[in-house]
Length: 127
Image: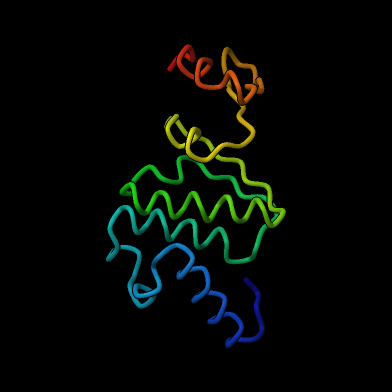
């Protein structure tokens, strides 16, 4: 991260670990973490330098439902703060519970799905 101030670095690390629910795991090595904890660690690393754009490919893929909700809430809060979150998911329930702009990639083309017609469009989307 090229941070000069060690105290500032440690504070920021503690913040992002807390944001993803790993505040008590900071002493562990990645190989000592479960798959879901590693997923959350990857998200924490992505947030460390407060990027303007976050690309999240199935960010809740290895997470239990409660933890997944926490991560989705975190991502939505970041979007409200003005950050751009681009998330790929196959979980249509996530899109229903956390509405936002929805794009679908089909036949090599990207199209926006209108919120009112999104559930019907998802049902007809090929795998």
